[in-house]
Image (cartoon, rainbow, N blue to C red):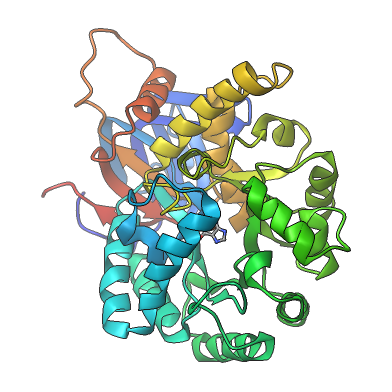
Length: 434
Ligand code: GUN
Ligand code: FE
């Protein structure tokens, strides 16, 4: 059972949980989960006749859940996570993030640091991730090369930035766009699971010409865009000064044609200060909000009203936002998302009910997974992304349900319980000894 195999048609047996909708987690005790050619055929209490000839792997009472999607994470910031946590956003960027990212011109440094990131990403709950690199082309290609070897499916962006960033910036818009085209040419056809995404850092780091150029490049190539939106009060004020003709921060992205379309959706991280006007813009463009609750606590940014966004039908997933978020463990992200939404209700607006655990589990799996297509649940037709866990080390005196075990696992934010990970039916990680 432990060796990594190429066969992507099989049956797993174990205690299964997944989101059927944002309001419902379905569970199976000693259920069967069928994968044919990397695609899920469904979960069953009794194994249907037609699948009985497939190899069956019995995981006993281990938990089997869909792989999670980290919709927003900065790979080059991974190795300084947990440091500089007394700052707000703009000081933290200047004094910590930009200082660190500057070092990625040095390929020896980049290669080593990215090996720590990819090693840990492979072993966490995420099977999919959308990643910021740095502005350095060579180091970004190195990150993509390392990620491709993990078997995970990711988007990676060479960052664009040409202003307000001290020594971490490209000469001007045309230099930044030229470097981006060169990056795209160098990786063309090179990777199967590691896709490029256009990554203007945020409006304060990108001139109007650069933003416009990214918008055009997205139109021309069909490539998606990721960026940051309405994270911190000083940042929001700054954007008003930088783009005075905009009606709000989201409108500034709209002006530059970088908010995307439902077929080519942009990811906007944070949206802590997105009001009704911004919500309308996000929804009209089919954009995804990457909700980063841990980061928003750490940088004293605030709490995004995710329940409002969810009820309005805006696309949402969860992001760890390392290193403003201090961990790539999506269980910790789930826990903090839940706690933050409870405090939003209690302290900010008691018309906005706390998110339910069901809703947050959905966001971590199917909500973010949707960005990648049919991903994040075990309904028939979805990519077979799964994580197998042994939660027996969390002792209990009760006969708890599978649903309770999932909730408890998130509230314990354990990360040493992962046994195996599958991506599109391919086993990419196993810690089970022979
Ligand atoms: N806004 C622009 N860049 C960053 C970053 O690296 N992290 C966070 N949290 N916000 C940003
Ligand atoms: Fe970020």
